Length: 217
Image (cartoon, rainbow, N blue to C red):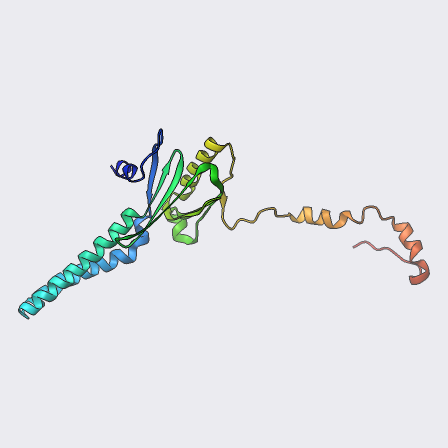
């Protein structure tokens, strides 16, 4: 049902299909959920006391209940509309801020230059949460706080390869590239001395330093 609704929302092109509709993981809205539940429960907890105050108390009860309900509905609406849509042709990001403020970004797979994911901290690792960063020639799309981040990254990588032939590797942001191992570094440092002849060096510096004696380390 969700895929069909968002499919109409993005005006699918010919032969285009929605592969996945991805929301932020609900746990990332823990603060908003807590505030909503607290306001609603507080209204009912104080209900009998407020009713003893007459019309004023009833008005306060209704105001507290309405505030909690409105806040919860607003945050749910933002969560529901804040969505990432993966189709077989493109990646679309709906960034919802409030009821009337929305930003839509999209990129075709042939425009994607690089893609990587980030998993930070203990809880993100345990809950398989993370952020995918997609860099393209037209825009930079960030898919934050999504579940199964590695699997989603793999899906995008496969779609890019299928449509463009580019074989982008799955990269975790922060991993160092082009590192030189200790053995390689030592080989590189010592290679410049391979052409030196120790006997010639002894003769060359004999007059300056006297007889040189080589000792093993």
